Length: 327
Image (cartoon, rainbow, N blue to C red; front, side, top):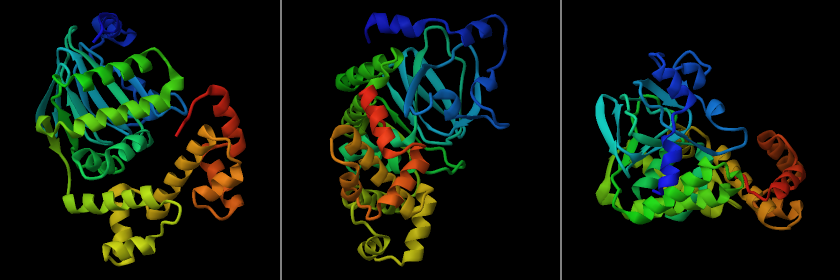
């Protein structure tokens, strides 16, 4: 990592200064508004953003907590010790730790020279990475499990890839972009994360993992891949036929493993694709609606406004002005 960026990350933060001045515990109000210690994306990410970074808070034991987003921990210098379901997971310089939503962990006190970056990521950010890496690998398993909200599981992927220079260079690029507030690079950052995932898929010899039931994962990945490929015409009936499962069984399994029903997953994909076309093409809105699989224009406008809190036309104008895409 370039020395200038590392020096920037090494600086003592305001939170760390208070700890050094005598505050003995983490100020939970900085992270959550709830009674339990679940770090809230609403506190950590600006409105409308899918990803943000912050340096890990040093000089204090970070007590057991969860997140309502995906956390990716990258160690730039030194090491960081996590406790996940009672197991000690030490992340050293150049290594990555992916923690799923609601995975409970604690972090032992880091010293001044233990410099780590927390990527705080909403699940939608990984849509591009999923489409780039395919569905037959452990990262696809993890991306399926990103949708879970099962607090009893301690799901993580620990990549010991300090020697893989391509991954290190890509991580430095995305960290630099986010640390320096280049907010119009979200699409580039999504693609960069996809490239990181492609290299990680080739680095299975370096991974330590904990993932849940493989049959359930297979069903979930097949569902998501089907929606990815056939979103214009996809139906639950056709998917049931492909998987040779009764509709009530498949519906229950999809809901259990992803937290969403089939209709919600399909709608999410169609809206994401519609946004991509709005921001990257000059196609009329009516043509985009038809292209992503909606037959009723008024229904699409209602669903879009419920999700993005503005009309499709207003969304296109806003994102054209910023020259960015928000998926």
